[in-house]
Length: 295
Image 1 (cartoon, rainbow, N blue to C red):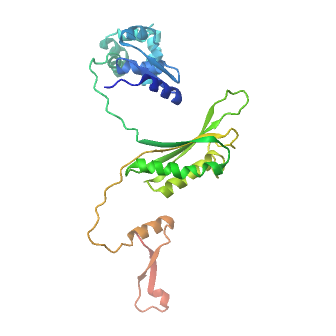
Image 2 (cartoon, rainbow, N blue to C red):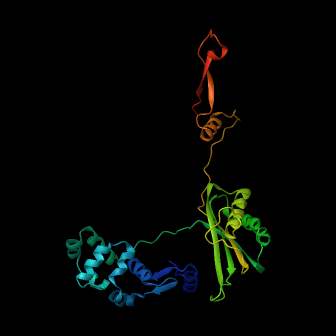
Image 3 (spheres, rainbow, N blue to C red):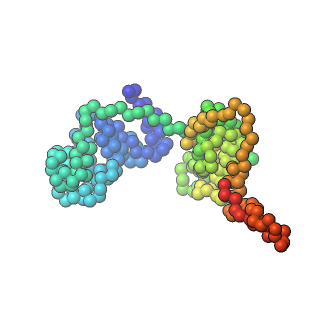
């Protein structure tokens, strides 16, 4: 497997404010990530694994879903470093902590040859635009949206998106803050997966109004633009392939069932039909009665 680009990884870690760990085995990399501060990468070479475990506190095991009770009892037993726990046998741990003790032993004693991790496709597409001069008015931002949506549709390659997100990077003008960029963002789940330009543009324009405080329902980051927008980005995610539909060779007359179902959903119990009941009524209206149409 090709080694990751450390410089690119560090930049991405800082951008996402993530905690990243690199080690010779997955359990140690997970503990290294828990040990890291947000925006920091902790790299543990194989020869340094023992010293790392010697100083790593057992509280890091909480990050991999071991119970707080187990960690508290380990501390009461004087086992404050993970290396101390790793020296115990499976019999000791299972006798003291049951099934969770066995799981802890297996976690702290990974196999030498671990199976490879399958490639993961995050199914996320993004398109962004940098303004030459900061934009302060919605009229400067709106014309960019259709261009970004068209670029994204070209990247979809037949897929459809279920979620759309819009991000704006604005220059910070708050007193006491260092000059930099603050991010406005808003997103929504689409009713149905789509690749239609009209629907995606409408959703993106709504999110734009939401981020700048011009929509009926404003987002948490919405407020008037004061510092100027330097960058706008639209992200599509939840990509799916459209289902194949078997069509008929000859056109068929459409049925009324879908129409009945839609009307019944919008107006429950209001769709009625006459049923003949009397062949010789005294009044004409007594010859039939109405009953709901069941789709």
